[in-house]
Length: 207
Image 1 (cartoon, helix red, strand yellow):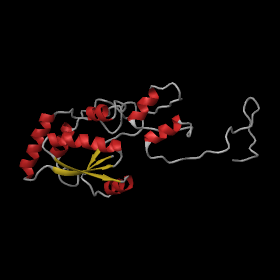
Image 2: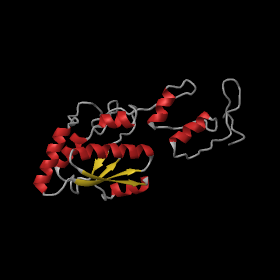
Image 3: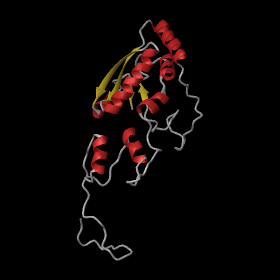
Image 4: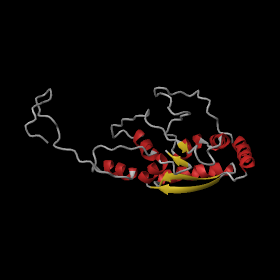
């Protein structure tokens, strides 16, 4: 606050209208929304689908949405088995049902992206040629990988440990194991996950 700030609004009222801003880190998005509803918070940022859908249906709040931001992706380490093999990466793509991830876990809130940039972003589009979900093709490629390498199609998947991240990881594990893969999930704090990925100490990760 600066008591001698000079500017006034069109009606001659001294600006700014508030004396300060207090930022409160609240990791749980449900608690953030509860704080808004209780009048304890004035502005919140939310991305959890449960809270986003609730606010979309509400007429009580002013909601501003930005849908052209970052993408959720599964990053693969192409320098380590099994994803150093093209056939393994292809198997992963065919085995992953992103529509189920968006709808069953995220309530249909996220928009689909089939490349590094989502439709609507500069460079984005929906005609990238990315493989569509095909469980039968995934099983075929898993068998091909195992025949070519003599090794099981096994890997560790790391993700952060929030409730939504856990639900997503469990859904993906079920999809991948249905194709014949062996999947171990490891939950990490975000800082540890980032460190592992940028230093190459991982096989597959939520990113």
